[in-house]
Image 1 (tube, rainbow, N blue to C red):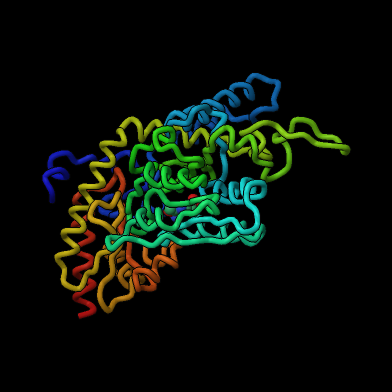
Image 2 (cartoon, rainbow, N blue to C red; image 1 turned 90 degrees about the vertical axis):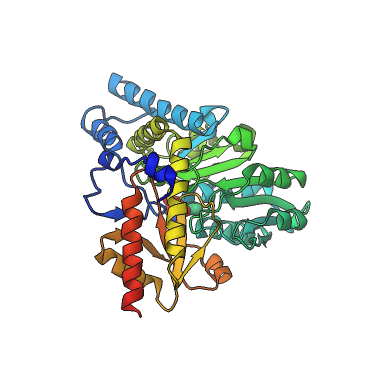
Length: 404
Ligand code: PMP
C-alpha cells in the first residue's frame, strides 16, 4: 500500500448500511452505495414532511417547496452555478443530455452543422447527438484518444471548424477514469464559436467541479453516482442558453398560461420540469452533497487516487493482467486478463465477495479502440480501503490460477 492510503485512510464504510463486512463493493462507477444520512433524509421526507411542491396553498406544501428549492440552491453552490435558476432537475444524466440534444439542437443546429464527440463517450453522450444530427441533417466527428487513453485535445484543436456548433465530452471517463482538461477543451470549443457540454457523471463524486471556472455551457450529472438516490439528476445550463431553449416536455408546472388559442411557458428552470418533480430525489441529492462536502472533494480525490495507484501497481504486477487508462485515473481501473473473458473474471470475483463490473460499460466505440469486447472494471469510493484492493488482487490471482 502507498504511504497515503496507509497513513490517511478515508474509510467511511461504517456510514453505509448496505455494505456488509467483508464485501468489497468496487462498482461505484455504475452506482454508489448510500450513506445513512441520505437514507435518513429520504425517510424523513416521505415519513414526516411529505407534500407536493409549487401548488399547495397549505403550510406543509409551502415548506416542501422551500426544501425543494433549497436543494436546487445546494446543487448550484456545489458546482459553482451563477444562480439556482440555471439548475434543472431531471431524471439523470441521460435525460439531461437528451434534453439539450432536443431542445438546444432544435433551434441552434441547422443542416451542415457539426457536433464533436470523443471516442471514450458513454452511449448516453453519443446516441442523443446521433438522433439530433439525424433530425436536423448535422454531422458528427469523433476526437481520438492519446496513447495513454485521454481525449486528445491537440487532435481536437486540429479538428474543430466554424461548422462545429456543439462539443460534448466526458469530464471523467466511466471506463478509464481519464480526467479531461475541461478548461482547455472549453477554450478550444469557444475559439470556433461552438458550445460545450460536459458529462460530469463520474466527475462530481471524485473531483471539485466549478462550472464558472471551467467556463463551459452545459454540465450534467446523475444523483445516484454521487451517493444520492436514483431517478434524480441535474442539467446545468448558462441562463442565456436555457432562456433560448424551447420546452422539452409539455405538461403541468412548465407553463405560464394555457389556453387552446395559445400556451406560453414558464421561464427556466420550471419550463424544463414538466409534471410533478422527483421531490424527494431533490432532497436526497442535497443530503448527498452535504455528505460529500462534509468529507471534502480534495480528500475524496486524494483517497481515490491513492487507491487507484495501489490497485494499478498490484494488478500490474500480475503477468497476464493488462491495464487500461492513464496512471492518474480518477477512481477507476479497467483491466483485462489474458485469455479470460471479463464476465468470468467478474463471476469468480463475486465468489470471493468482490463486486466489479464486467462488460462494455455502455462505451462500445471505446472497446473497439482498446481492441477488446469488454473490460473488467474496479471503481472506488469513500467506503473503499486497502482491504478491498487486497481482496481484488487475491481474486484476480485466483482467476489466473483457474485459467492456468
Ligand atoms: N455518462 C457517464 C460518464 C456515465 O458513467 C453514466 C452512467 N454509467 C451516464 C452518462 C448515464 O447516467 P445515467 O444512467 O444515470 O443517466
